[in-house]
Length: 247
Image 1 (cartoon, one colour):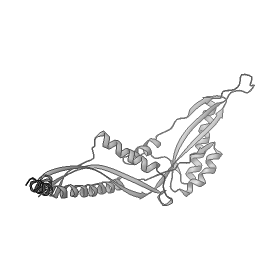
Image 2 (spheres, helix red, strand yellow; image 1 turned 90 degrees about the vertical axis):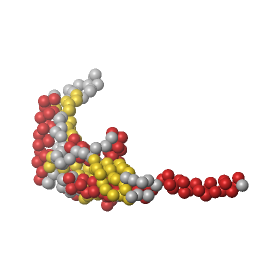
Image 3 (cartoon, rainbow, N blue to C red; image 1 turned 180 degrees about the vertical axis):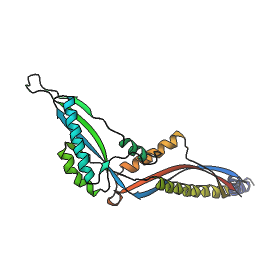
Image 4 (cartoon, helix red, strand yellow; image 1 turned 90 degrees about the horizontal axis):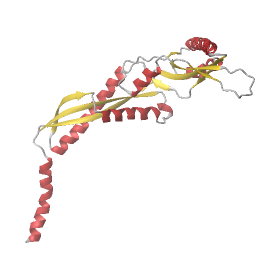
């Protein structure tokens, strides 16, 4: 008799679990979702380090300023202008990098250290790192000659950027909402309910979620890319979407 009672209890267990999972509704579900779109680059950020020497800081600074003026003019002839920091938004890591890189730089100075028995006069060295925006990746190759001719060194890293991030960010937000809808449907199916409405959409997140979103942006920038992805900009948007689930 005990065996039959145990078998009946085991057979009834799945139905009990299902009854506990089902909900009568309404149920509110809050989902953190990130959307991403890949957009063709519209400009390319390059970094140039200029170095000049002189008998003192004033002399080195003057040489550096002259080299900078000549270089800026030579690059302008190629369609390469000074870095633009105003991109319309700074709510992503890409936007922050572009803004910081577009800020005005200042030269730094150092004095050569010579041996005690050296008869040479120590010189002052002036160094400044400049940011420029090139319209295409191909024109960057043409910029190397004037950069080197004016005491500059071109950084190997090239950062693809957009001129306008507003449209792509909105597309990424739409993708985030679609992804959140899929997750809400999964919750609804588990609870025996249906997704009825979006109650709230928020761009505000707790510090942990925000940090994870920035890390995702950073990984997308520094991760190795295939040839076809070199001229693409990944734009991310992270949202908190609240749904109501009903019968």
